[in-house]
Each structure stands twice: as structure tokens, then as C-alpha cells.
Image (tube, rainbow, N blue to C red; front, side, top):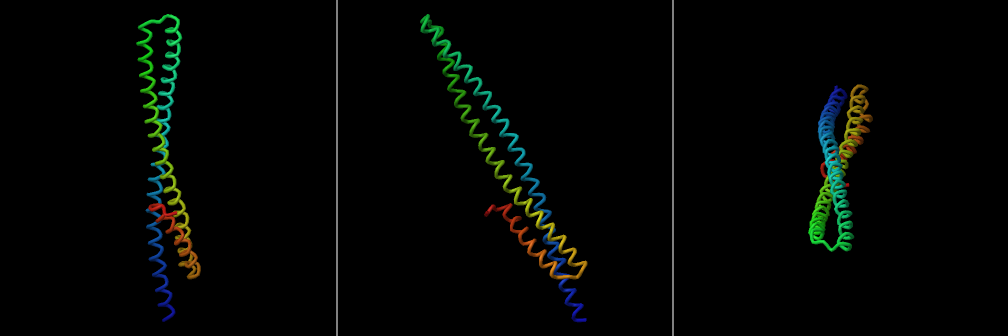
Length: 172
């Protein structure tokens, strides 16, 4: 009877640890999915910003070319209207250069957000792998009544928990 009680106590711990690992695996799945979505959205927004940047660069280049053309005409004709047009173009060129800088900074921020989200998602992905292995080993251990399989699962689960918490905190 004492041996049977010992097995039952062991099985209770097995069940409790399996539930804890399963809950962590579920949370890791949700958080990993959330960070993956955030990564994709940030990449999409960054791509939009870079396209906007290119549009501003093209406009600035067009105004630069027109300015140079007008400067050559001014040298030939010395026209007041051309001088005004040239000044307008130079103002627009400065405006586009400023806008390009702002757009570039925003795109880089979005890329940084994407990179951070990918790091979080990667850690949650590893956590899910190790936690699911743990759940599998715990199930096999309970079916076969072999505690050493559960101990191996505990080791795997511990690794999974490290990745799980790292997914939130990024301590490595």
C-alpha cells in the first residue's frame, strides 16, 4: 500500500507540472503570435515609409535638375522670373530633404520595432517547442509509470520556461 501511495503522489506532481507547462505553452503561443503579427505590421509600415522616402527623393532630384537648368538659363539671360523660380525650387528641395530625413528616421524606428518583435517571437517559439516536448514526455511518463522520463521532461520544461520568460524580458 505504501508503494501505491508513493506512485500516486508522484503522479499528482506529474499532473500539476504538466498543467503548469501546458499553461505556459499556451501563453507562449499567444504572445509569440502577437509578436509575429507586430513584426509583420512593422515591416509593412517600414516598407511604406521607404517607398515614401523614395518618392520624396525623386521629387527632390527633379527640382534639383530643374534648378540647375534654370541656373544655366540665368547665366545666359539674366532673367528676374528665372531667379524667382530658382529660389522656389531651392526651397522645395530643402523641404524634401527635411521630409526625407523625417521619413528615414520613422522607417528606421519601424525596422527596430520589427527586429525587437522578431526577437520576442523567436524566444516564445523556442519556449513552445521545449514546453510541448515536456508535455509529451510527461504524458509518456504517466502512461508508462516511469519517473525518469518525467525528470527528463522537467529539464526540457525548465529550458522552455527560461525561453518563455526571456520572451517577455529579453535578458539574453
